[in-house]
Amino acid sequence: MKLLAGLVRLDVFLYFISLIAAVQAFFGGGTNNYRRKVSLELNPDPSGSSNISVLHVRAVGSNDTLHFLWGSQGVPTLLLVHTDSPETRVQIDWARMLSNNISGSLTVEPASAVRYSTAFLFSKIWEYKENSTDQSQAAADSYFPPYSLEEFTWEDLNRTLNHSALTAELCGRNQSQHRGRVCFQISAFESWGRDPAWPRLLHNANSSQLRFLIEGVTPRSNRSRFALELLSIDSRDHEAREETHRSIDDEYTPSIFQVSQLVSVHVNSSVPVLSYAQWKPVAYRTASPVFEDSTPCRHSPASPPLPPPRLGLALAFFGGALDQGYRASAVNISFGIPGEPFYNVTGYLSWSCLLGLGSPPEDSFSPLVLGIMVVGLGTPALLLLVGGAYVCVQRLRRQQPGYAPIN
Ligand SMILES: *[C@@H]1O[C@H](CO)[C@@H](O)[C@H](O)[C@H]1NC(C)=O
Ligand SMILES: *[C@@H]1O[C@H](CO)[C@@H](O)[C@H](O)[C@H]1NC(C)=O
Ligand SMILES: *[C@@H]1O[C@H](CO)[C@@H](O)[C@H](O)[C@H]1NC(C)=O
Ligand SMILES: *[C@@H]1O[C@H](CO)[C@@H](O)[C@H](O)[C@H]1NC(C)=O
Ligand SMILES: *[C@@H]1O[C@H](CO)[C@@H](O)[C@H](O)[C@H]1NC(C)=O
Ligand SMILES: *[C@@H]1O[C@H](CO)[C@@H](O)[C@H](O)[C@H]1NC(C)=O
Ligand SMILES: *[C@@H]1O[C@H](CO)[C@@H](O)[C@H](O)[C@H]1NC(C)=O
Ligand SMILES: *[C@@H]1O[C@H](CO)[C@@H](O)[C@H](O)[C@H]1NC(C)=O
Ligand SMILES: *[C@@H]1O[C@H](CO)[C@@H](O)[C@H](O)[C@H]1NC(C)=O
Ligand SMILES: *[C@@H]1O[C@H](CO)[C@@H](O)[C@H](O)[C@H]1NC(C)=O
Ligand SMILES: *[C@@H]1O[C@H](CO)[C@@H](O)[C@H](O)[C@H]1NC(C)=O
Ligand SMILES: *[C@@H]1O[C@H](CO)[C@@H](O)[C@H](O)[C@H]1NC(C)=O
Image (cartoon, rainbow, N blue to C red; front, top):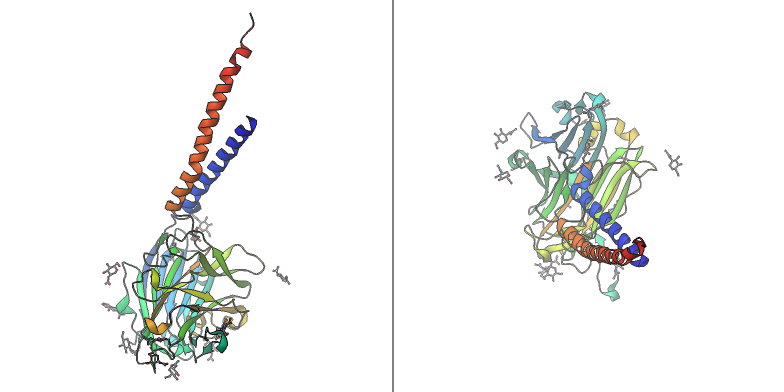
């Protein structure tokens, strides 16, 4: 009897725990409703002689502003600047931006309002010929000379700007490359949500998404695969950590049970996360993929701290301090694993990545999974509860005469 009552209590306890977890997950601990007022502004080269421009995504919160600056000069770079005032401005000195000395040509004013800044650089695309899977011909993957994104010529961003959807697309090609192109599609967000396209990454108002694609490029071998080198630049007081989390919920990204991220944290501490790049280890081999078009990705461990490259918007903003106060960390993300079809089959690859400030969004259980959980855990609990109550009532009834006054 006591055992049964104990079991009932344990089950009720578990039931409430799961219910609380469910409610919390559903509302994301109360942060999911954070909104910003987001606007896109293009700052083109005023001389009009080049396609160089800086895309400024201004995300104003109640008491702060996030500036996301995206530009192709030097190397495609996303610069993230957090200021603690809703009225900070971005200033570009175009004469210097277009000169050989770009250092210090981009400022956020007033400088005293800048709380934190970091930059992500997309520096190289590696192409490699996968080694033979045939055990008898064991050989290492062989790398071709990489495509250096520094040498690319980029198309006009203005034509791709969509102010209502908050998107833009930067496409370019290597001078010597006659076919194909490489693009970065950037999306900014006013609030929490999920991208409609696979891998359906979660986002929030403190993040923006880049979708990277390699389209129609002639591979240098029939066994070619590609890899992208991503560099993060942050203060020397902060360190980069690359981590992979398991996720049991694959409802949004079929068959992918992992989320990978490169986070920046204070040296020797794991919280708070200052900024991150987050992605799912999957790429797609067609523009409108079906399940069979997905292909797994791998990434290298994060490199030890490197001297940051003196390039692009990172140099324009950090200026001379880049050499002394900053470090870079690199990861290679390679698309496709042995056994998967090679690039030559579709001539297309897309991969998405979320870049943002603060803690990366975490996939929680979806409403569907939650429903299954609540029903699965709740029904037995409810049955036990009702059964227990019934047994108790029966026992009380039987005990009733015992308490009756003896006449
Ligand atoms: C976004 O940043 C603001 C200000 O730093 C913070 O209050 C908010 O919780 C963040 N939102 C999310 C979803 O992280
Ligand atoms: C706005 O920021 C200032 C300084 O960072 C702080 O003192 C103030 O409490 C904040 N106000 C709100 C409404 O968050
Ligand atoms: C580049 O410009 C900065 C700021 O004006 C200056 O301090 C630096 O000496 C210049 N560097 C070169 C190589 O001219
Ligand atoms: C191919 O290279 C990978 C590492 O690049 C290695 O793990 C694998 O054993 C190699 N396969 C063969 C057959 O040599
Ligand atoms: C990119 O273009 C440059 C200049 O034309 C050339 O030297 C280089 O080999 C090209 N790179 C690739 C990977 O084709
Ligand atoms: C500018 O972009 C357009 C297409 O958007 C391209 O045709 C043109 O060659 C580019 N110009 C330069 C100087 O790169
Ligand atoms: C950008 O394109 C729009 C129309 O598509 C045009 O009105 C505007 O002048 C262009 N801006 C620049 C800076 O080229
Ligand atoms: C901007 O995006 C929206 C939503 O995706 C679309 O309906 C609209 O046609 C786009 N506008 C332009 C100018 O491409
Ligand atoms: C790739 O395969 C096709 C068809 O099998 C062949 O015609 C072509 O020569 C191969 N290309 C290379 C670079 O090996
Ligand atoms: C792609 O490469 C594979 C492996 O070498 C080859 O069998 C196939 O014919 C190639 N496909 C095309 C479309 O070139
Ligand atoms: C971080 O850890 C290293 C090695 O454990 C130590 O030397 C260093 O003093 C620590 N730094 C801080 C700020 O705690
Ligand atoms: C990325 O791959 C290239 C080619 O194998 C290698 O030279 C480079 O060191 C790698 N970078 C990282 C961060 O692993």
